[in-house]
Length: 295
Image (tube, rainbow, N blue to C red; front, side, top):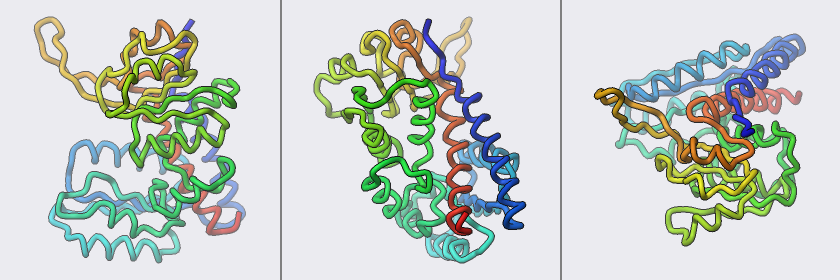
């Protein structure tokens, strides 16, 4: 029987732990972690994500400092706001919601966030720390989605050491840090991508497949060997016909129905990795607070 890895349950468990930890930190320090959320413009998907992150942060006791800026905000003005937040004592984590307007250099903005307040874990200094760390240190600010995937894998209670893991996708946000995390768990890691030859055969040898490529149902069921674990990071909106009506549907990078026939465990889309990403954002904010207060 294939296990469906429920990200909603796992993320709730992590949020419950964080809530208790934040209550304890408040008792000891008289303060709570602060998360500054910066959104430029009114992209509908961004507004949905920001609302979800703000709600989850508030529920665990994190103070949210909201900065919703107009679409025409200049790069210079945004840099000034980030610099102000870098020097604001009640701000421990800074999240700049992507995408930004085309007139703004996203990497420049992300690099301007102080590494100690980098809630997303994207700053080059934090990426470097993750790369050279001998193990997955609890004090590191780690990209949220990959860390959420690792928590899901560990939650299965399987021995990761020695496992063959294939990460499909080489982005700075998911693919590369995911590979780093798996290496530190002593997995043998292969990174596959759009130019990889014989990707199907590579996946068939994997004990763990993590798909983060942004292509609907790219990973077919027969790519998955018997008893492999599948983590589907993809979230793609497709249109389907239902009783003569065209409807939108969210699907992952994996053909869930077919892959489920071979996998020992698999994440659904939606309800899999997504909730873990938000929970790990709250984790990073709490760790940044603890680092700042030597707790």
